[in-house]
Image: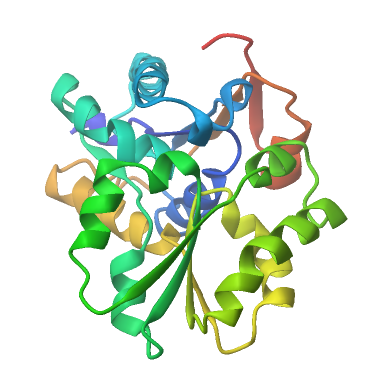
Length: 260
């Protein structure tokens, strides 16, 4: 099918979803991708459900105009608040991401799991439904206030991030967590700083690899996998300062547009 050569579209409220893009690109190097960084409206986690749905629709419309064959909602907040509406509205496969609470619940030995996520994710109906289905597991929830904005400002490795992470993670350590779920696609970029705070036996879990595997599975199921060995293209759109995006993805093709 000719449409198999069309790109995969991804969007997030900024640069965080590039952590998902990286896993997909590693697993599916033949696939072209178009990534939309809605940094102007970051973070989504502090917005209402209605605002998140509206922004997700706007982002989807942009990617569909670029002939994307599948869309990855590379944002936990947008997935947990808007993917149901997106799937009802558009006839294209959607891949969502949500906090890997279930894998953590299966792996924990202490029975206590920590989750660091945005307010929008932790307050969502989908998240509450997932947690309600877990038996005998204590979930320590923590909103990562300020983390996304510092990452978007290019302050990875900064003292400001260290201070916030210490504040958020110390109560979890004292509660004897042995798994920490990263419930925001920005947070994998904090792993080096998080590892300095957590005891070495605490496992850090994020969704990136699982999302990449699911993307491949859905492409195969819909006969959309690009089996051509031709050159793939990776294009990144941002509506804010491209410097931080460039710091993350290097010399990829970055397009700055004020309004998508």
